[in-house]
Image (tube, rainbow, N blue to C red; front, side, top):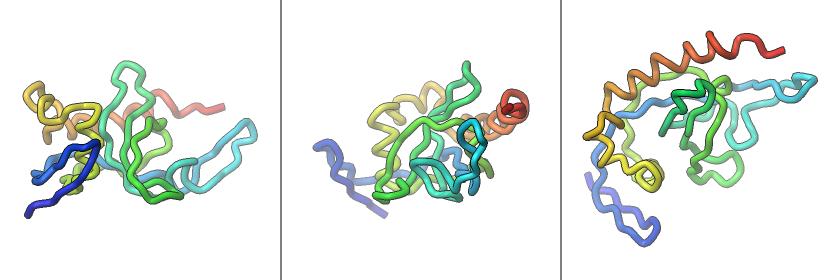
Amino acid sequence: MKKTLESDSKKITEIEPFWCAAANVKKENSFGAERVERPGTKHFRGGAKVYIADVYWGMCDSVTVIGHHRNSGRYIKIDIHVKRLENFRLELVYSPKVAALIDRDFDRRANVNAGFYTKEYAEQIIAALPLWIENYHTREE
């Protein structure tokens, strides 16, 4: 099946599915000094599916995600704190828009040879992120 996309004056005519870590934005998140509970985050609705494009291995707190924006409905790519995510899993990406956003900054095809954007790499991300939450972000006072 061929999919096309016009992005940054480049035409993507065929997308091969690739493995990526995915997660959901928590339905309720606490914000501010008063720890006010609000649905989702500023950019994503609670429960929204996001693809994890990259992680900050040394910091153990943030990831780069791609998902549908809360208001515009367009795909966006932003960094988000890992404690705002849950339900980490492995998924195949079929969306040419998601692939284009990853390729724009991370050059997915070139990085596959270096070991990134493979099924094994996505599994490492899925295994690590819950440990980050447990070990580094349990105390939020």
